[in-house]
Length: 97
View 1 (cartoon, rainbow, N blue to C red):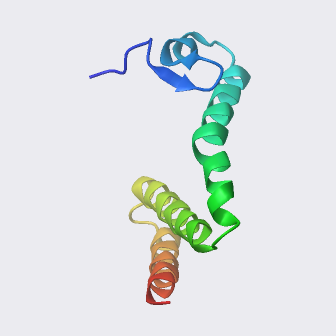
View 2 (tube, helix red, strand yellow):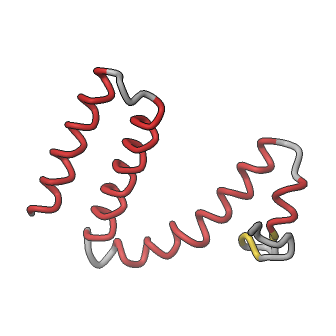
View 3 (cartoon, one colour):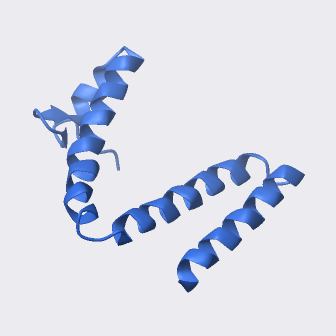
């Protein structure tokens, strides 16, 4: 089910409808930046000052996401398998500490 056009997307009363009708890629990127800044970055900043743990978790999630995107497109590639192995070792190292 699609998200209704009237649903709040980000700050400044930006809605999903506003994002859908935006023609310029730069305008869409600006909407996304505002959304990420308000819902993610600004909220993490306060936690990051008290503990490095949120930053560590965000790094693990980012690495896993990049690995999933990279390996999905090139499953049989040797470079892809080496990248996956490196990610697995890195993530397991984070989890064991």
